[in-house]
Image 1: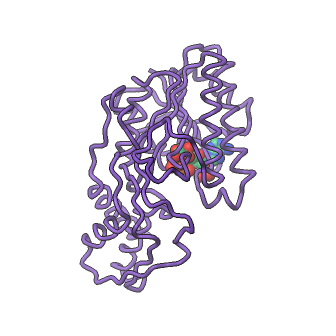
Image 2: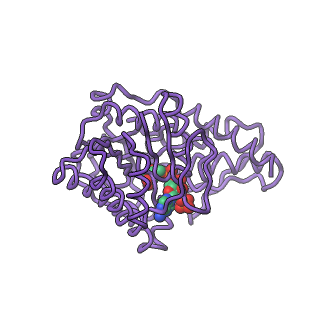
Length: 314
Ligand code: A2R
């Protein structure tokens, strides 16, 4: 079984390489010229904006499965760089779709990784959100991911390609950038414990409820969907049980002996924060048997341990 991960140097790629290797697969992964991949796999340099290069990599490797992770994945960057976000997430995805369509290997399974952000401004009674819920993206990143998913459906239908689409909700774990809430809280706590920051943790809207899944569960979901998912289908990936950000904060603070004051930071509040976002995950369970196994408390503990360890090395 030969697998190609496009965009393997990011947060998820690192974990996916490990998951697939443990499952006994031969793994190839691509990264940009200025990136590196330390996992156990063969590495190729690839910018998905170069359509011919994407084709060459596919022709050379002839993978059975491709996971397309390469993206401009930050919502805040998408507001600042809308053209770049659309180019990478939409035109880049078309380059991947065209490469697979052109490939001499006809039965490639392509996994397109989208986002729970695609649902956007949901109806107040839409939770748990099923895959049939209309998309109403609330930011540029989300709109490009919705577009990626639509392109996947179009290519699957028009060219009979084997494509599975994923809408992944919030995921977290050791190594995630601290622009995401669990990683942010844990990093701040680790800095305070080391005396490198005042004993005040800055937080945003603590009342919002979001669905968090450990990245190690998420990559297992991707592998199972590649093995057992139904071609042409879209799957939510998430825990299916939202938690209040306040609970995440309390759990993280409870793991520290430091006496920490909590301070709300206006810049971390979003004007139109949706009160609860929680996916319906019955479809992935029915088709693959997957459900999240790692508790959120464990994810928080491991993420805090990561920051304690990694700040030490600075
Ligand atoms: O932006 P960078 O320098 O961190 O590089 C990212 C890379 N990437 C590209 N790869 C090939 N050609 C491009 N033109 C290009 N632009 C960016 O894709 C990064 O190494 C990788 C994406 O990884 P992360 O940003 O860490 O995302 P994560 O958390 O691994 O999520 C994987 C997928 C993405 O499609 C998300 O939008 C979705 O799951 O939630």
